[in-house]
Amino acid sequence: MKNFISLLMLFASLFLLAQQTAFKFDFGGNRVEKGFIPITPFSKFDKNIGYGFMDISGLKSIDNGGNTLTGDCITSDKPFYFSVAIPEGNYDIKLHLGETKGVSETTVRVENRRLMLNNIKTKQGEILEKIITVHVKDSIIRNQSGEEIGIVKLKPRERKYLHWDNLLTIEFNDKAPKVCSIIIQPNKTAKTIYLTGDSTVVDAQYEPWASWGQMLPYFFVPTEVVIANYAESGETLKAFEDRHRIDKIWNQIKPGDYFLIQFGHNDQKYGNSTKSGYRKRLREWIQKIKQLGAIPILVTSMNRRIFDENNKIVNTLDDFPDAMGEIAKEENVYLIDLNELSKTLFEAMGPELSKKAFVYYPPNSYPNQPNALADDTHFNPYGAYELAKCVVKAIVDQNLPLKKYISNNEKNFNPNKPDDVNRFHWPKSVFMESLKPDGN
Image 1 (cartoon, helix red, strand yellow):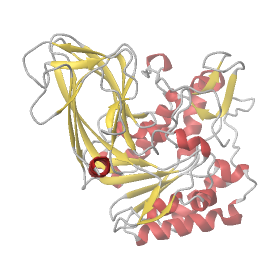
Image 2 (cartoon, one colour):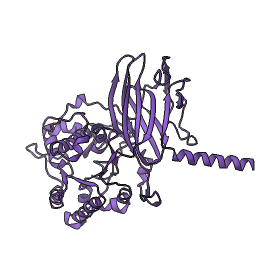
Image 3 (tube, helix red, strand yellow):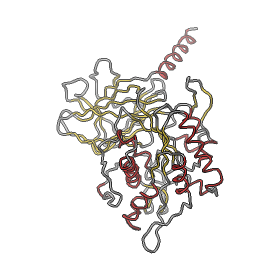
Image 4 (cartoon, one colour):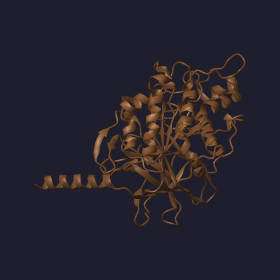
């Protein structure tokens, strides 16, 4: 009987933990701020308590005395990951970064390398408070009342992804990441920007692969809007429906939210034409989005890295970009012409320099990679970042409603003048894989 009662108490505590949506964590040593959960270098993730570090090797605490919350911190010489079991939803995360008697340099990404804060430097003794807003999702489809009505059919490779694991995972990276505290609160008012698409949009987990979708959060102000990326490698419009990814969104999108759609690469790859369901599905999606009170934005697929003898980009996407542009006019919805912007960007880079934006690497650059990588479709972080800036440029130049939520992070981008790749800042994550994403 005693064991049975103990088991019931354990299940009850786990249930309550699974429902908890607000947390306060004090990172450091033995001194703990009142009302905060202590996190030390030995706080390895434990599913029974629902939080902790993915790997505690290399972690250390620094305690300079003084303020209980900010006088100590946790740091490491390599990237470290902190996870929290939390229900799906939108959350504001307040971070205190820095050290009271030293300097720091921290880049913050969440889930599958979703860029939130880039190269945050603190001066000697400076503590900075930063807020990020994060969308956390799981694969269960719930109706607006919260009842479970289905499930997203994940691919086998997706089951390893950090954005389907029922946890919020925060990556702290850079030369000297120093974290004093994390405060997590639900955000019920932020407008959600849903992203749908393929491997050029997905939150890619592994270096050196990346997409513009996972760079986009960096360019938006926190607390007011949040990026919810539901794209996946290899998907077509039809596959997105068949795997119930679209049903997941239909059952949670709210009036005033935004819905970005970029499909074409794989629709073309699988032998589809714009007349065999592509236009029909796009129109159906647009009508449904409008019915739900949300705002659709179409995004034409970016070009592949294929040049002609005059160093001009060759169209390899048939009439898919044109079809999307025509539907945008017919349905009177916003259009971001990433196809045209990418053409300008890649031609400005030229045939050789543009390889620096794609997954072009010599053998043994990454684990289990005996052969060179030469991919003219998929991007590395630099290329993904430049394409995200193209998307932001279109929002600003066309004065789309989303413009008011764009932050001051490099607003004035000119695709005719790409950023210097040697000045691009991207400390690598620990997750690396040479296996090519689905799709082409």
